[in-house]
Length: 253
Image (cartoon, rainbow, N blue to C red; front, side, top):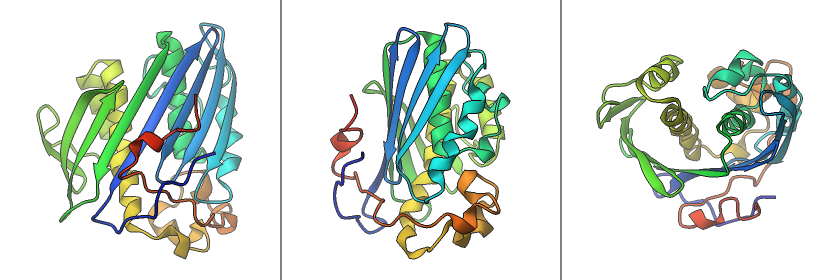
């Protein structure tokens, strides 16, 4: 799954794009995510109060060990449904999961709690110019956030002006500043601002994830010591959706 789009544009010429799509059915949420580097799928079953089953699938991923992260994801079975975007992190350690699969599962949990039908997040982050970019997020086609970002800080507009994106303080701030529905979107955009910078690297030049351990050690399943060394690069898995956002999740319902 995941369709090739175009030859990757040089950094500075492109746009990182990420799409989440959530679909609710009686007792189930089907969740999909795709961006330049990843294509993941989650199916979550629930009884209206708790997660009763969860299945994660990795269809396009940067390292050979990424699919192994579907195992720790199952620790979410039994957790109460919650509208809090960070609730899933209280039931399994996000750092032993795949970051992006875990984020998708967290969205599935909140979608189940809402009892919603369909929801789609679209994120676009142009390549940085002198460390700056303008990050945007749309929900179901409507603009929610436009952030002017410099380094790891939001320059505006209010109420985000001066807010630091790095570290967990942003997540706590978002849950206190916004209603939970809006906080979920803000946390999703915050994550993407960091992932977007991966466009500046040619990951195919790295034989394994261990090359990046000085930057990302312990941050996720594939960057866990003992796993990173055998997490080989899956070459040719970076796609470019700069001029083809409609191709994101083109293989999903």
